[in-house]
Amino acid sequence: MLVLLGIGVVVLGFVLRANPLLVVMAAVLTTGLAAAWTPQADAQVMYQAALSTLASFGKAFNDSRYVSMVWFVLLAIGLLERGGLQERARMLIAKVQAATVGRVLWVYFIVRQIAAALGLTSLGGHPQMVRPLVAPMAEGAAEAKFGVLPDRERFLIRSHSAAADNIALFFGEDIFIAIASILLIKGFLEQNGIMVEPLQLSVWAIPTAIAALTIHSVRLWLLDARLKRTLSTKAPEAAQ
Image (cartoon, rainbow, N blue to C red):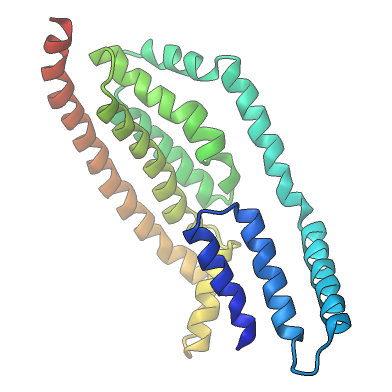
């Protein structure tokens, strides 16, 4: 039971809002030392246990070093934003007369869901698509019609932009047969005596994806109606 002390360290660290990396390191060391401790353990044994724990931690980090590649993506996105990517996206969408917030997000929703259904889940995402492109384009569509946006409506548009990405990905990726979620569902059902093929799960994910598209289309239509009702009444006040 002593090895469960690592969980307590994690909880305490987050309660104290300590650096997450330091919290994880402290939890790893606590778990490793607790696993090696016995009433007969001396300082040398505990020292070797600490070295072994650090070696295991370093090996795991080295084996998963490709995860750090995401930082290069963030750097590239930051440079593009500094070069005016968001402003260009706003200017581009402002030239489309028929564009509204709901229509922009609806088009992205469809593209994201189709891409996820084909297994291309990395084509979208919050850092690489929503923040630099989708949200600015949605805001630009609103600004072209209503002028400067209040913070409340601006944050509402951003949250709907993120939601469009999340929902489209969540209900689209299960259509692709070689995805982790399909394998997880298959394994869970088999453990409970229900034998299904991955293709069956993928086929039955299609109606769910269609339902998600239909429901979210209504939500985006209601978003357009809300923005029109709210910002149309605020525009004259701002002009005065």
